[in-house]
Image (cartoon, rainbow, N blue to C red; front, side, top):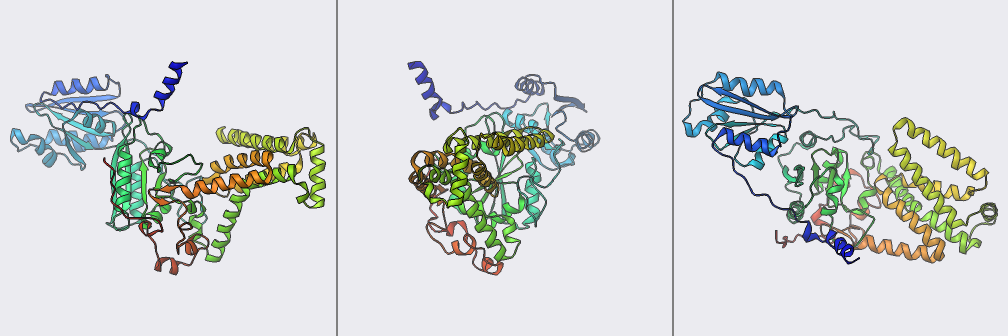
Length: 512
């Protein structure tokens, strides 16, 4: 038992998770030794291609990964010029002569560390090694297949661009460049993941971003201790401020380049991951969950209507089952007489209590949603049809569940889909409010609501209050939170992140 407890403690001991730093290995002057080093590092992988050729009196090796480079560019811009052009350089300047006088490509870098060589090869670069020189050349001639740009499926707008992020980091950067044609738009690249060596791009507007927030973000990314980074969710826990457990996320996620561009002009920072068709946005505030691109495309009065509709729908999605259960169990007199008769009749004809019945329907609904989401699309439609028939008609007719309870759960589920990014916390809170309402009545629902409210107000995103500009109250709360003012007002009184209430421009005192 003691060993088991000790193993669990070691599992959550952050100090034991520190990655072992690899000793940096320098490349040699001998071509054969360099090839052996690379072959050993790749364990003689079959897709590692090493083309050795002799040009006059010099042996040269071109090292690539099969299907990661453009073979036409490799043949016409690298191999062919090496054979047909004389290099007028001293032996000491031979590598510089190749990069400056021979190769007909850009993105040429000199490298001399084994780790840099392996990263370049795995990133789709061609590495040129020359016998007698410890410096190697990496040439950017990537040619691997990528998905074409298409409309994002989970972030749909009626008016706006139909472009969505793809898995290629360079393509995503180019989409942002096309929308913001300003030299103040800056990109920086870092490598995250001890094994995957994933490229992570940081994007910001130089004159709008807070220097302290940018510095803190870089520090948190450097402290990421993961072997692989395969999705945006891997980095979210490292980018959030330290604090208690909360169902709400303080890092935004979007698949739309236009949304990212709008956030950049407000002083936010976008984090894009190579291989992930979405971008992370920091800092991210709670009020931004209820803002969509269509809000700024429609007339202000209609945007105000839809925004308040989202506020009300979110409250209904988390509170309605709990309030219904608490009133039906402890205070049925609060219902109107006709509705009370219906509810009492349905409860009397079902074998379960109102609380157990509501929890059962919530769980069955989540099972149906997961099955329809994970199964192939044609089968997903079949699951939805069968589930609707079984639960909506057969279960009510058989007397297993009541029609009022089913209606309440259905309304709360539909309301939760209005804000897709809040579905996960809404599903958990909906179940928690139902349990509290069934155990402690309306007082249990009120107590849990106070706990959730305190939890939201206590959170920060890179030092900025999560509930800003509502708490602490700022002028923008009456311009772009509760209401959506016209574009003339928004453009005349633009507010950056560092100007929000509660945000302070302090230099980061963290020791890197």
